[in-house]
Length: 221
Image (cartoon, rainbow, N blue to C red):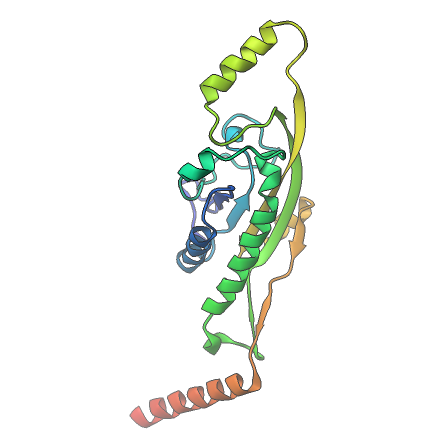
C-alpha cells in the first residue's frame, strides 16, 4: 500500500539537489537506503539552482510540497574555487547523470537473487526531464542573497539598461520502483529499468537451495 499524507493523497517524491561540491558516495548511500525503507516513494534528483526554491522559478507542474535535500554541506575548498562559466544547473548535469547510473547499478546489487524470476531481476524505472528557466545572471550557491539583491537594485537604479535575463537548462531525473505512466503523459522521457541477469551456475545454486529448504520444511512437518 502506498504511503499517504493527511489528505489521503499519495506521498510526494523525495528530492535531492545535485551540486558540484557534494559527495557522490553520500548521495548513492542515501538513495539505496531510501528505496529500502520507502519503496513506494520516488526519488527525484535534479540540478535546480538553490535560488529557485519557493520563488516561482520552478516550471509548472512541480509540487511545492516535495521534500528537499541539498546533500552534504559545502566544502570549504569549493568556496574559494573559481566560478564555472556555465550556470551551476547546467554544469552539474553530467554529474547528475553519473550519480543516477551509479545508483541504478548499486541498487541491482542489493536485490535478493532468490527473488529472481526467469533468471533476471528488474531495476529502477527512470524518467528524464530537461527544461530551461530564466535567471538573473549566474548565481552560485555561495552567493549571499542579500548582497545579490543590493547589487541588482543598484544596477537597476543606474538607469542604463535592464538587468540581463538569461535562460539556462536544468535536468531532473525521477527514479521509481514501479512505473509512473502519468509522467510519460506529461512528455517526460522514460527509460526502462536495467536487468540483472543471473548466470546458469547461479540459477542452479538457487534452485538447489530452494529444493533443500523445501525438503527441510516437509521433513519438519
